[in-house]
Length: 448
Image (tube, rainbow, N blue to C red):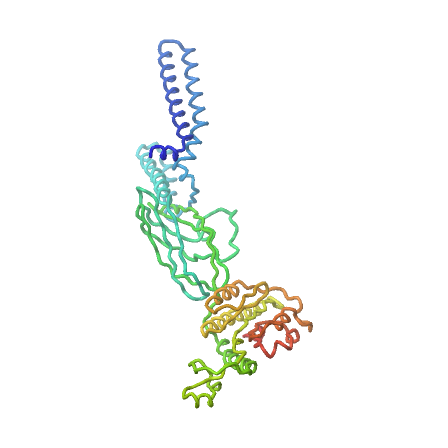
């Protein structure tokens, strides 16, 4: 047991500590001996010993103290704290300046005592605020899947690691929303997760506190949180003291799947075109089986039903083609605000249709520039598809506006069957004829 403890002890700092302690004791003895020699008139020897004591203390201060300080809990006090005057603090500072002027002009000892008390209040405020802000950890918990425009409940948890002291009046906010005056901080390139401050009135020692926060992300896409800002005005409210807490958190907000007007307009036409396509492709009889509640009435085989005395339906060889390929062509001929607004409507409509296909249980795959998913069970495919739609951005077209058949659509037309739901801004002439009979094409320019 003792050998295990000895192996875990870092002997280097302890050796240097005892070496420094012995050196300081020796310097103290030399200084005391130099004082005695000076009193008996041996000034030269006393001066030499005093110089040796001072030199020894200086060597220890330069060699041992910084090394030990870096390995002690004092390094927690090296955390950068930003200060910002509150309205009350500005009034307090003006009062201090007025008393300083009055004390210097009158020489009144009572004014100097009052001034000392006021300055002591500032010092005490700084020390207490450092204690409040130190040894506090933060955690932000969000749901696994987030949708644009849908409110969600998140949890912000603060943990106080201090053994002795609680923390009071803490506010958590985004780092860019705090009072930092550091102009070197780059502006965030993506929206931040935390959009408003969260207040914690009391945080007990060696304990934690959790606040539930309702968040709403207004648009799809990537959100990041590089750092949080932890601030307090405790104890007197004269200064707002704050420190940054690195976060490095990133989330992807999925497009809203709430059906819009365009969804209700397109869904009946889409259902009819899909049913016609499947009926037209499935003409070879494969088997006759028992009727299920999900079967279509026109597939009932009445002769087989009469013979068996129960409902029988015809099953065709191409029924496996009841799958959908959702295609989103992200190329735009221009990026004006009106066109970008229609682009966002197309993304939301594609997400709503993907969610609908998932609910009805249709096998589905997704194709866009730079991403293509395989045909997977709907529950496994839906969230990767929505995440891809969340991150899709307009790209510069290569042949929009020409009559040349687009290779993007050529590869789609050469696929292995299934029905395609296509969103595009490409002209009709760029879409192959073989794709028209197996696809429903929504032109982004037609969305309003």
